[in-house]
Image: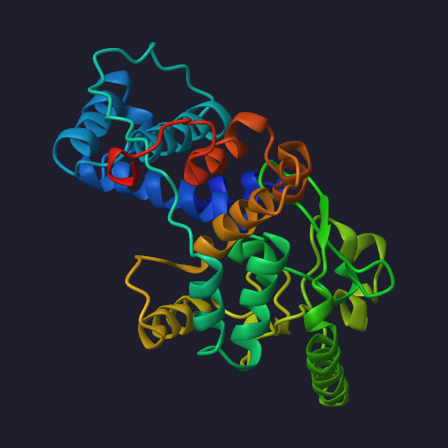
Length: 318
């Protein structure tokens, strides 16, 4: 029997435990970097000393943030605990990366309008969900057709950060364009089915429970790719969702054409969504639920963006 490679063991274990694809990619990447840093020495032959050396390398040589350093540590600890079944000594003497606190970049309403004027097609629809519903880019691209509820005017985010589902508002202004887009997706899906394809990958073990669900239109991605991919687990050829880089490039170009000088990205529209709701008088708890933040403290950062409560008048305005 062929021995399963270490990284494949990690990948399979993460999928069995229903970790997100982003977490899987991150953990695999960090474990690979850890092994390469120690000249491909097998992790089973290493311990806390090597882990500490790698974490110090990230902080001192690569100047990574504390969040990045902690992510690397979590990936390595997962490997030892779940795959190698090996206890490593308590890790000490780690040079902790400095935790920098930055206020999020936020577009003003006028800047947002200018940027949208330079977006078009599918990219504009995706960004409309980032700004109009406060979704993360990954959440918008992972939407399935059944997650759009036109009657209740809401979108359902499945397995968001922290593996939690939540609802957010569906902007009324994009309903017409979104329906036209989904009609095109439906026609393409019918063509794919006629050509012996049209099946998509399903989350968790739903394929075993619902044999033909993967061919149903409701399970198709709202923003499918133009090309087919092959799933390594099931072996099926299917349309995955658009790649994040497609939207990132479109947003970068739109910001430049709009003449906006802020260093924005697709995620900036989520920050703008929260800030503009606060400006409109919505309470912080409502915004917390829409964003899917576990703690209201995370959402409170947008109150600092608004500079509310400072109570100081500039001497220049006296």
